Length: 209
Image 1 (cartoon, helix red, strand yellow):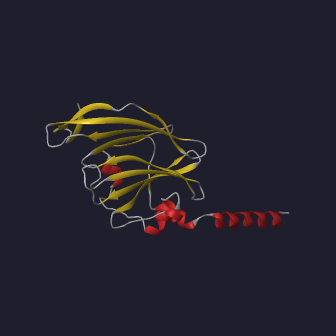
Image 2 (cartoon, one colour):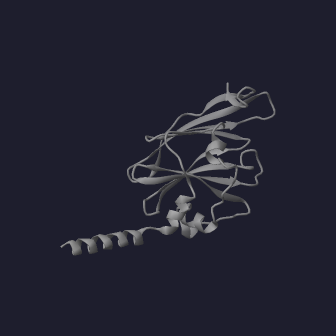
Image 3 (cartoon, one colour):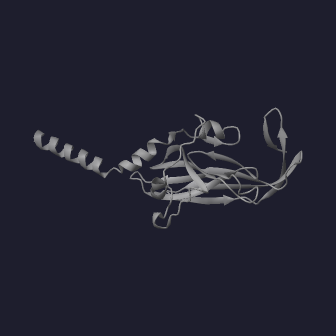
């Protein structure tokens, strides 16, 4: 009886190892672990995403497998943008990751040198369940992302004018939730508000007025 149980346990262990997506495990290991709650804004952005002040680009083959929801129709143009490894955390029964998409060129302040934060949710086996661009940052955009175990709240500021002491802007707040199936849902979008931002010397940062 004992011999039978040992054979059964060994068999289950081998089946489990074979069932793991080793390439996905390697991909996950390149993402840094973080704990929730998590706030990503202009003060914490570099600390969270660039702790070593280095970029770690995701290989094109892995982008097609673990970033693109539809790999068959995925086109990656490395001359125009790249994806970088950033952070991961466990969310309910899934793995969640934040990766960074960096665009190089552009014709307006809103798409030139644009940084996007992409939220991805994976099954434990490595399948992409959902993905969503949740934040944009460059000279024309400023985002604040707050992630808790219950929801993701994003404040996105669009700067409407430049080279002034006080810059007019639009502020939009969106709430996302990851449902039981691992799907990211936009559960609330508040009406866009008008506002203005000013440079705060003490904070060394822009601040909503």
